[in-house]
Image (cartoon, rainbow over all chains, first blue to last red; front, side, top):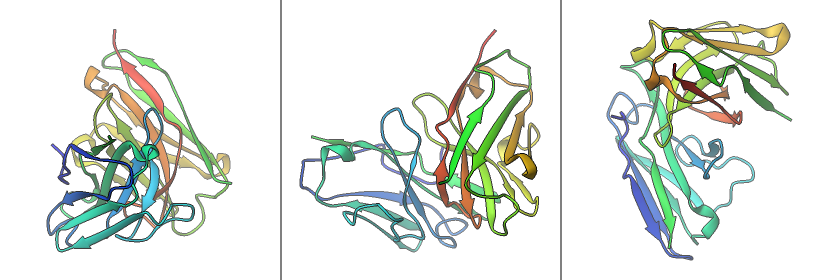
Length: 110
Length: 120
């Protein structure tokens, strides 16, 4: 299974705030910054959050990230139907000397 | 404008070696700090990082596939090539290449991906 643990699913209604967690260890999240990717159905992943809490140009401020210890989280406020997608966390892992991804969280907007 | 495009066979026989090419534009892999990675995604499953090559030709591979993977670059052609030996049905996946800035896990630009099916 994935080195980083994410809940397989999350849901919310339009306008709500949802959070997605990403749990790791001292060899990955504990030592390195976390990035988040959004994958809309049938498309390539999109760069969403970098360095734990920074948004690339063009990403709405409804999306925010945080990291504490060996866990990270992605928050989406003002949920929209367009936010329905899979979300992945990623970081570097010292023990594996490579990039590790979470198992992904499927967000459903009810 | 940065773009990346993957190319290669859509169908591969078991035991064959897969060769994929990532052709990119809008940046140079000879620029300090630039890196390109390959990531794959089996149908309905999660993303899996495979390999990375840096501007200075440093290379990194996922531990589980290290013996089967080779990554290389042709800076003059703006291409990165990935080979995966001894293909099996479990290697069926969409393969993506992505640009990285400064290594880590920051994939800021992705190709559209190419689906590779392993079947006889």
